Length: 122
Ligand SMILES: [Cu+2]
Image (cartoon, rainbow, N blue to C red):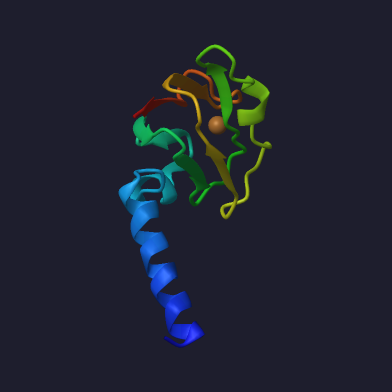
């Protein structure tokens, strides 16, 4: 067997193992998108699989907003989930979640109007 063909077969076998092992799933690779608007988050409740990501995407914003993690499972460093203040309509902020549990976020500039939750599950 030619070396090139052998390598291709090994590579294919490795990808089947990677997918079958449950370590890498499409759910974990595609971030859940939360829109940041004037002045709301949508959707307000998001579920992600452990190791999944959430991408906050500013959409048509004129006002300045931010993302601030205020409640999180034990051991999570909240300030790692704090975005910049931005009014840029193209700003995005993406974070990966590696601990199971419930996370509460606000925009600290509009703390009563802009609140949302992320639930991380298996
Ligand atoms: Cu805001």
